[in-house]
Each structure stands twice: as structure tokens, then as C-alpha cells.
Image 1 (cartoon, rainbow, N blue to C red):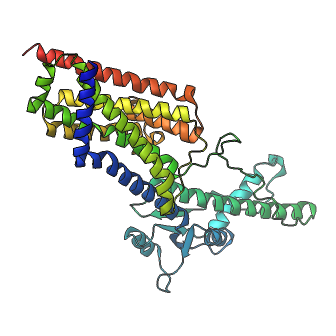
Image 2: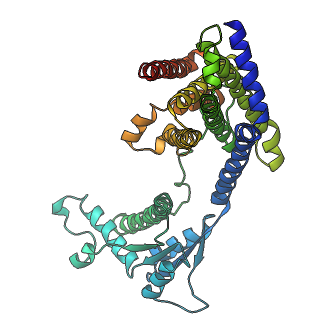
Image 3: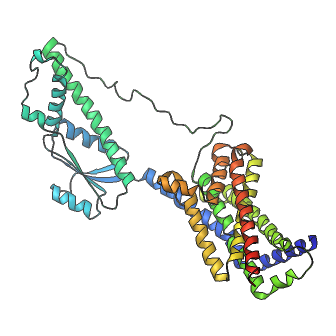
Length: 432
């Protein structure tokens, strides 16, 4: 059995060395994926951080509310405010058309008398705080109190929902500041009328709460997540599972050429041949992982990105999850090569199934963005187990006990793949 295992391993190793396309798929493609995807994501985040959004503003309210909202937009580092088109004023229809044509991402129309309506709402709220027997303390018409300060927003149809929410949140912050300012003004007038006390305006009642941001990590291993820390593990797992194509292809070649039948006539267990092939690709998977981690550590910094941090990881946990992921990928390649009847079938099904499992596992889309049903389905993907194991190591300083559930899941997947392959062969041979 040992001779058969060794012969199978050597033969598979030589076949792999001669398969330039297979080697490119196993090593060059992952390197390109990591470089391209990390560069794209890194540059996208930089653009989002640095890009200012041009806003077309039509202010019909020449009073406190409208003036302060426009000033807040101008002072914001996010917005570029445009109040005229080619040096000329415009109306609401022109604003709407400009946004609809994609010339502006957002158009803002502040309605006429918005300040007066807001001031009356504040007065009405103060009036309701006094007992009824005190009577009216403001000279205010009931019709005026029913008016509402309105701001209409026009969005470009291609604007993503997350950007709309960010813009609305920013406008709400500006509006809240103006409302507080007007509330103080009304209370100041009331104090002066009732108590003959002149309140002095102060700017010390803003930003009273300080929000401190920090990633949860230990003092010894300070974590600063970035595009490299996220992308290198994700595409490492994805590339390791792509060994299904050359592994399954070689299994089918042996069957079609008659080599598999001749190997069965040799002394020893037929499983030794499978284990020989699996051992070679198991080692290849480990080499893939090491190669891609080195890409993140040495190559990505040459493109102006962060270096993959390897100083804060637990090496035994990393070795465990790499070995478990490589085993799972090897098992998946064996079962595909056993069931598929042609190289075309194995390559098409293998590649598409890996992409689907990657999408479900969170490689393409983060799992926290998935709906509840898809979040449950994602937990069935072996790529999700491997990816979560890598993330825990690189981003949460996980040790062996923390990643053990993922490693065991990947190991069970490997064993199930071998069992399915074995029973399928027996089932097929029973009908021959």
C-alpha cells in the first residue's frame, strides 16, 4: 500500500508540474485576485472618504432656518453647495431636471417661511407646557401654528440607499442645531418679556458628548482592520477551493485514458491512489495559503497599501485553519472528480459551485449585509467556515480553542466528501 501511495503521489506531483494552466490557476490567479480586489476596495474607500458631493440648493426661506442650513452644508467637508446655474437663479423644476439628468447627486429645496413655521411650532410647544389658566403667552395665530417647516430632497435615481441615508442624517444634524438655536431664541424672548432678564447666547452647549472610537482588542495586540486584513484571508480561502478544477480534471483523465483501471490491477488498496492524489493537493493548498499571506505581507505594501499584519496572530491557530481548509478543498475536488463524467463537466460545475459557495460564505458580500434567510444558508458553506476562522485569527487574535469549531467543521466536510466519493464508486461498480 505504501508503494502504491508513493507512486500515486509522485505521479500526481509530476503531472501538476507539467500542467502550466493548472499551476497558473492555483498560484497566479489568486495573486491577481488579491492585488486587484484589494486595490479596488482600498481605492474605493479612499474615494468615498475624499470625494465631496455636489449639492444643488434652492433656498426660498431667507431667514434663520434656511440660512443656517445652507451655511452648515457649505462648512461641511462632504458637500459642495451650488446655488446658481451658470451664474443665474433657477426654479424647482430646473433643479429637479438637473438632478434627474445626473448633473447633481442631490437637490435640496427649502420651502418659503420655513423659519416662521418652525418658530411657531416651538412657541406652540412652549405654550402647551404652561397651565391652561395662564392663557396665551405668545401672540400667535392658530393657522400659523399649523404650518410645518419643510425641506424637499431630490435624489439622482442611481444614488445608493446608504448615501441617501447619510445625506439625510447630515441634514438632520444641521436641522437639529438650527432648531436648538431657535429654541434658545424663543426662550430668551420669553424670559425677557416675563422676567425682564436678558439671556446671553452661548456656544458652549454644543458637542457636549465626546464619542471615542476604538476597535475591541487587547492592549498587547492592537488591531486596525483595513482592506488588506479583510481581502487576503477571503481570497486565500477562495483560491484554495479552486484546486477542484485541476484535481477533478486529473481524476477524469485517468479514467478516460484507462490509467485508473490499470492502477486497480496493482497490489494494494485502491484508496492509496486517492490518498496519494489528495496528499499532493493538500500540500499545494498549504503552499497556496503561505504564498498569498506572503503576497499580503511583502507585495501589497509596494502598491501603497498596508502590509498584512502577522505579528499579532497565533501561529498554531493559523496552521490549524490552513490545514483544515486545505483538507476540505481537497475533499471537494475528489468528490467532484469522482462524480463528474467529463473534464468539461468537472471544470464548469466545479468553478461555478466554488463561486456560489464563496458568495454564500461571505467572500463576495459580507454576511452581515445578507438577509436573515441567506445568513442562515451561509453557515452551510465550507468557505464560510474557513473565512471565519481566518478572520478570527487576523482580526480577533483568536487562539486554537476559538477556531477549533471551524477546523472541525472543515474536517467533517472532508470526511463526508471522501465517504460520498467511496460510496459512489461502489454504487457505480455494482451496476457494471
